Image (cartoon, rainbow, N blue to C red; front, side, top):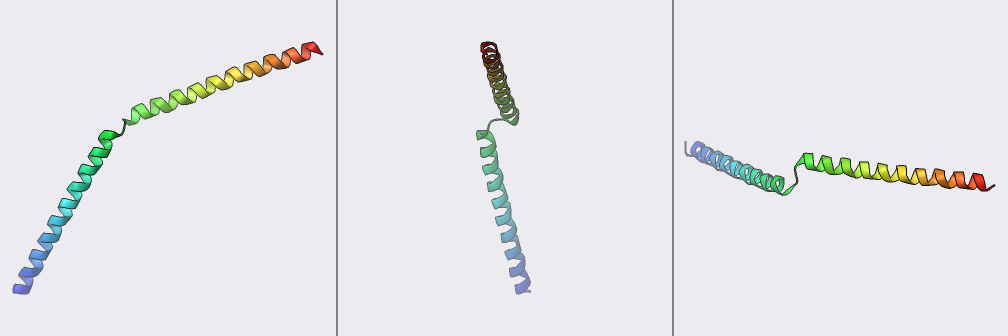
Length: 75
């Protein structure tokens, strides 16, 4: 009987340790989530960055076309 009781108490200790580890992990994840900007903001930033790059590409393309037209006219 004493072996069964020891096994039960060991199981209870293991369960308590697992619960404590999970709660600690949950707390750490909550802290990380609070420090990270919301996903919507990240998506907006990425979309604005892509839009800015696209606008730059359009401007460069227009400049290139204008330069090509000037070269053709000078020939």
